Image (tube, rainbow, N blue to C red; front, side):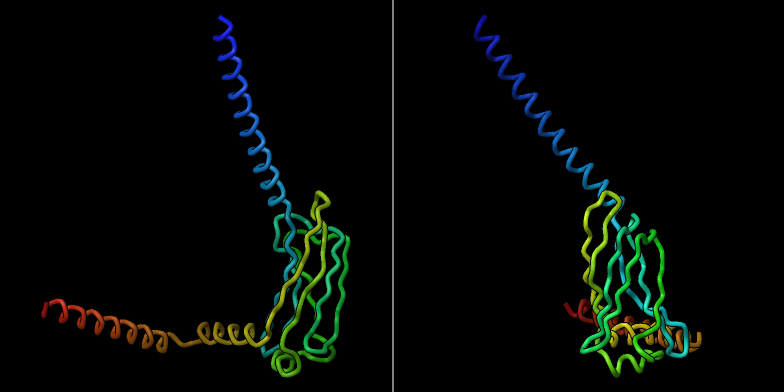
Length: 184
């Protein structure tokens, strides 16, 4: 009888330990999900308004508000540092800045600076610190924007010729494969 009670007690302890472990893992997962659901994400980008003109844009792309925001944009090499602070940056909020000094065209910016670095921090809704460190290389952004605009502005006839050329190359590749397969 004593052995049976001992075995049952041991089994009960093991089951309790297992459930305690599972509960702890669930709590960790829920904490992570809660933190992700309120995480601010201040980011920097460019807003091209046409004709080479642009704004530098700060946005909160996160899932929660950013509190006590303290960010610095540093133009490199040896450019100005622009500090921006705010008690609150809502989800999806955009703040636009003119470029540094008297620079208004992206081509002028590329000639003078290589990149802009965004650093700083903010708090999430639970008071946790979120560090910000992002670098934008001007040439990469400008070139990708110019290419996207070229593709969007391209006449349909040019797009059709390019697509037909892709189809022709693919047909040649298939024909080559079929000839190699037939010889085997």
